[in-house]
Length: 474
Image (cartoon, rainbow, N blue to C red; front, side, top):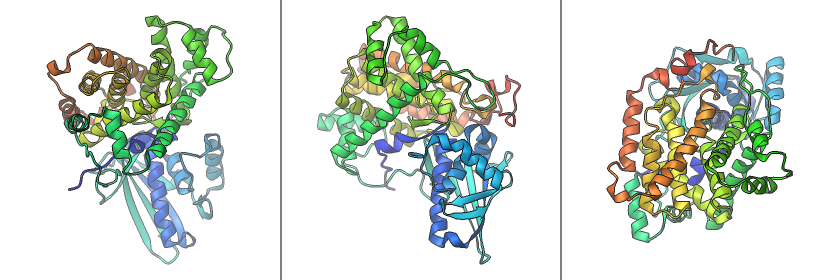
């Protein structure tokens, strides 16, 4: 069997919140089904229905799964679609009970009837399953089932697990030990090995440009989120905090752009409390934007989208990291660690709990920060292990099925743990570490298999049942 080859752009995807597995994945599944309909002829389509199973049904409303599949069927691209058009588009479809397939073929479609939430049904392959049904005027009928397996990855029933390509890389990496061997063989650090692999798909210049675009999207998300107040949508009435925290920290100092804002941040010094407050602000900003159906980057998921950019901006603002090449290398290293977890465990909270989201993102950020601060390859892997070790068993229990409580605050915790893990690794001898990154990946997967389904993004246990609010209210 060929090894799965995962690019940095498979781990970091530009999309729309609030969930990579419940929003971006179903959106991409709808686009794939739309391709099937286009091949058969859109003019022949009589009707379309969508069935949502398991976790997609139980927390689908809070995550906008129904919104995502409709926009996908309309042929909209989650990378470029104007987030300000989501509400009016959904209102129009609901009012007219009409949907334009691929933006051109108008069919009758009632969202209340034709998107079916099967709360008590799950398919065996993965908890995040959805089936598209289509009837044609000639009497033909088709059905395609897709699984959103975490981090925006989608698998069609009958396909191999994952949509990472099966190209042959110069340094195929399934485990951390393979990554270490590749670094030792070449003398390159982690980001260097990753760049060599990325050349299989595209030129180094194109990879750098694409990765820097990822950072620009992260950066814009942080800056935007740090300046928007109010209450998050969804019914929980959660107040946004990043803007208030930013206002307190900047203390009236003037700025009109991200660059000027960064100068203001740096001018405040580097006390522990000051730095801690800013890291929390960065993470809150991203995930408040994510909860508002804004544009974010899966890192490796939407629910954990704030950790990597928060730690990267910490590096930029407080560790002399404001250099394009350093930023690109940071993200390359982070992506490789994420891919190791994807191959050896899961990036899906519906499969593994929040350890698969915040835990993985913290591990990614820890390893990347360690390399950025001059750590050895062994120290990078040790940092990634430390970060995940202290997220093992973390449940996913979103209140109301929304990516808000406890999800937003968890990004601040994941970012701080990543920084701590990096500092510990940099001050340690990795040769004396008793647990390897591969061992903690295996442990995470075993923990995921043992975890009760109540704590796997179903909103049926933990914090989700402590607040008296139903999914229908949200």
